[in-house]
Image (cartoon, rainbow, N blue to C red; front, side, top):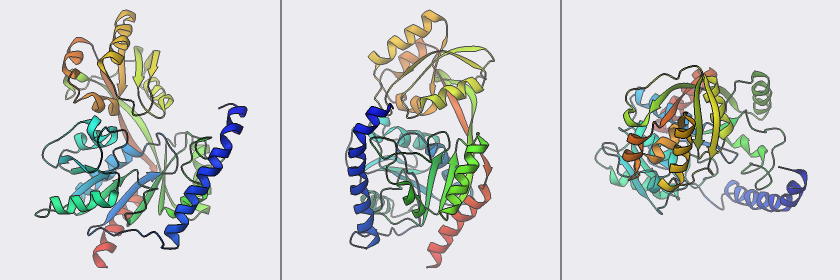
Length: 355
């Protein structure tokens, strides 16, 4: 963002900051109150807008809880969805709707974890109440709140905030001038910060030192690319070949990270076509991209999240059969602090049950 535009947007950022701080003050003074759920609530969120690596972390936490013998339910706002109110995305047996009705991240996490209950709701208290009422006979043992650092109406027993080391941290500005959803000082509300994209060790360590001074426990993780997986048969991954030429397309908050991941796994990114974060895909938008890739003799590749966004579209099967669409698998690896996070997750659940 150029300096002139930044100065123009600064008054709006100051106003936004004042509104956010007033709301937080009302919660701190208990004028606005958080409601407790009948099961422990673990929140994963961020202090900035856009991609931070929060969804891969949520997926990792869900799988960790299942390994611990828990029955997690996922509760999210469902950002970018066409629906309103409480929507049951998955009942733990059947995926009941796609990304248009549930939002990108919720659709992806529900599809990747078919055994968990997944619900979206703007008001998390209503979503939690729905989960406990709908599944009275065999209720989830823990609720995982996705993208909920700012949603304080529902009490959380562990607050995890994700900080993207690839984005500005020390000089970050408030929306709309920058990407901060609230002042950086408010990060102290969290119990633990997970630094994502911590490949640049110097930057990650500087951020970690600042977060520790603010009283937070720290974990650091990085994402790394896996295979290129064909849409037509996602159960049979095909390894990316060094020198594979691709057209990268996606509708995500941080497309530069996606391009970097493709290059890291040996792909040559010859063309890039990006949409706004959460922008709905249509056949009309996608066809010119696929035709461009076909004419250039390169592979059209998108993110795994975008794959799940398209999965339930009526045109998905036809386009997947006609064009060699692929998505890039991404995995999470902890650089440090994994045991700290695991212990805090377990302790939050145990402390809730002791109370």
